[in-house]
Image (cartoon, rainbow, N blue to C red; front, side, top):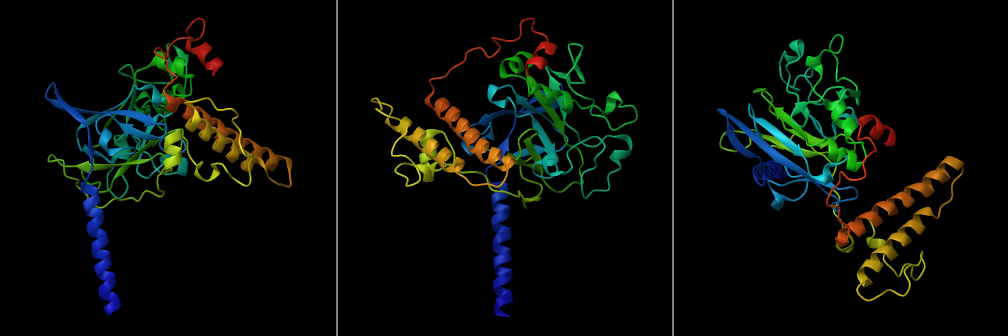
Length: 349
């Protein structure tokens, strides 16, 4: 009897905490009246120093940090702007579960009714679906007359009505960054109008998994319609250690020197002013040495055991250099292909 009361009390407190968390710290878009309709926007960036590969952040709520919970009102159009250069290689996707297609979960598409509803929107392909745009125009399978992606079809013959631009949009995020910048700006519009859907949805990166953030639906008073955070986010976000935060890296805390698995130093005769920076590189090289010192039974495994730590180190080296602020690029569109055509860029890629 006592156990039951404790269990019920614990469940009540957990539910209460979940509800409080759901209402606190919502990131709201910037809204304006356009010809009598409300149009809201979110401006996406990537904080590359957050976690191993970075997380989304939004200019509308920098105080909330990375992957904030966004608040969206049903029936209102939201424009997600991916203009900042950090968005390169990170095209936004929208799904009913975290990570969407990465884990074979339903995404927002014209023929996919919101889970748990009796909607017949799949019959005429009018389910909530994002619209992927380049320079304000819905993207199709071609750009400047050249094929850059397949049709987002599903309907007979791949009708234009079934194409919401995702394939072409994602394709262009694989271009070299200077060419990607030339073809922007890139934006995604979403208006969710299913009044019966009672759960949250997620934004995520269509190229990299593990970057999902929650979207809660709100009423006109900016209060979440559903307090509970459902579905659950199936993972926790990376949190860089204090040492990694100084370096701009991830996962190096335990590889600081001295370390009995590594050399006494990797950067020799460190000049004044580079003491902390050199410590970051010492830890990087220690991590790589430990990772690449291995014993395996076959050629493929040996290749993987060598290449993974090698490339993880390359990512950390690049992030550490960016952290210094010494690398700048005022015009990302420089050094594009000779004739500036999509075909040449695609060949370069």
